Amino acid sequence: LGRGGGGGGGGGGDGLARYLEVSLELFIDLMAQLPTRRFFHAVLADSQLLARSRDSPHAASERGRLFGRLCTLLRDYDKFAVDDHSGAAVPDAEQRAAACERLLSLQRLAFEVDSLKPFALAHLSSLDSPPALRAHFASLPPAALAALCERAGLVRSAADGEALGTSGLLSLLIETFAKVPSQREAIGAMPLYPDESTPWDEALVPPPPDREGAASLGGSAPLALPKLNLQFLTLHDYLLRNFALFRLEATHEIKEDVQDAVRRLAPRPAPGGEGVTFAGWARMALPLDDFKLFKVGRPRLGELAPSEVRAEAIVSTRGCRADVAAEWSGLRRHDVVFLLSVSGPPASGAPAAAPFPVACGLASLRGAEGVQVSDE
Image (cartoon, rainbow, N blue to C red; front, side):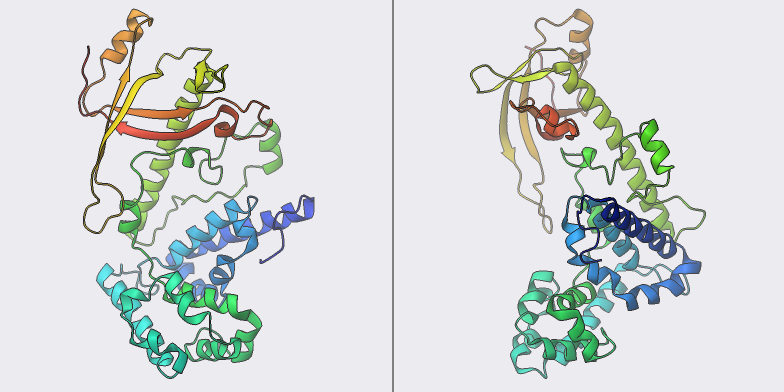
């Protein structure tokens, strides 16, 4: 898991990477249904798979992007707020209380170690992040850290802990004691509209396979997507899966529209090297005559993103056909538009297998909702 299939160009590395991805897909299916979850959850915890994958070089490589996405999906199901045996949903308050109790038990063990007294006396809210846990425990000798993990029930023996090494033990501590945002918090942190990275992430929004690709994959390529099975963990799980799939379906449609418009515009770098010119024309895409950003609202209490961002975008329909100009004039309040920053393909040419943003010079993509439309 740490080094195999980490980016080797040979068929052996690709085969091992695909084996890891298919195995993770199986583990996700086992964790996503109560009849198998109540038995497999203990096996997953004992294997320390999620902790080992946290610092895996393969997960951090370009070839391992799908592997990392699958690990994230498996981690979401591992932390899902449901009782494995009764199937009852666990309220957020009970989940937070259980997390605080686990961290308090670690503080009690750390109180017996002189170098960990600051950790034992600190407030819980300052300790439940991965950087804080690393800062407190990274300075411990490997033997002392392994003994602490053994007493905390994270490893079977101190010898097994020392075999994992300091980085492995730190990953195990983070996986067990770091704060996990609730599903509601994760959904609240999602952008309302896709940006320039999500639509072209093939681990989330796969491209339609050609005949050769479909024959080679046989329709069995794993994807980091939730599945609509006959069984769900809770009603909230059912709604989350439908929300994720609906969001990606809408993202795929936006991706197709953006690609079609940018290809028709045919952006090219300006002759002087500054700016961009458009050699083509698209019905529903116009260059901006002017753009002014005049308000960035402060984040609301407990949030990080701005509460609102207001800007003025000016386009000219001069030179457009009458029917096209009428469509642009028909924009109303609450209509959704997308703002693109395009520089054109590189001067040296993009590789044949380059993703669309690189091939066409798409630098940024932002969605916006109209609050006022005026015609001069």
